[in-house]
Image (tube, rainbow, N blue to C red):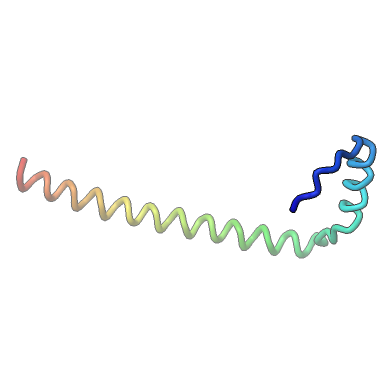
Length: 68
């Protein structure tokens, strides 16, 4: 069961400070590498969506020209 005791704002902020100090921040090289991976992934997904859109649009235009 969840702990339903109330804590003060000061206690909350102390806990937040403790948790932030436990974070292991990436160094600049890791950050650059991760950013590159994310950008590459976003571009790849955008190209896939573009390709799917192109195929669907072409098929719909073809079907429309046959029955239109």
